[in-house]
Length: 268
Image (cartoon, rainbow, N blue to C red; front, top):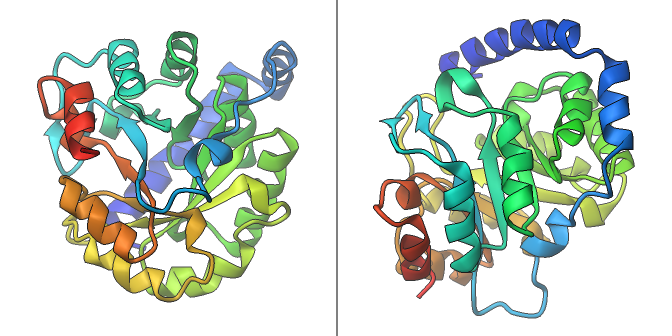
């Protein structure tokens, strides 16, 4: 595991222990009991009938370790409305505060403003965080293969399905893909997506051709999501040529004065 990722995971373990004291499981369960069913993130992202256009998961984050402050005037509700009007299929919401300027509370605020399903994007390393994600309104969760053991991935996917949430299982290294690809869709294929992170976790650089290479190893490309480094309509077209019709895009949109207009231009 890349050193930067290792440090984040160590910090996240400490944060989870603090969260468990601040909001015990009983409190999470009570919050979940008051919620309706999650929105169907999988169905929003996957369109089996149209292979000529891309589905965009538009991302929400104030900053990042590699990019610093991305948007000083960060207003997740206003941006979510722009994304929705511009045709986003779903929204990815960073909830890590230290490195990405996120908050768990942003999820409910976004869902109250727009009808799109919302992914909690964070470093999930404990089952508590899966329950926590649902309690704070998430319709889907990110699982990063480089952070987790196979048994954790299986357990967290089972729990997510029980809670009605979709999982986006993300890989970067080809070794991670070989290790986990046969777990994607367990225990129910209609609740799982496979993400390819184009960011090199050691060099912190992006290259969308990384998605092309890994896609060749995957039989069911309808569930593939290309993440990071996507900036132009030609990038989306190249992804479609390799069978990838879902893209997660954040930093490029958020650096523009009007993220909604930037999304419309990307999908033109």
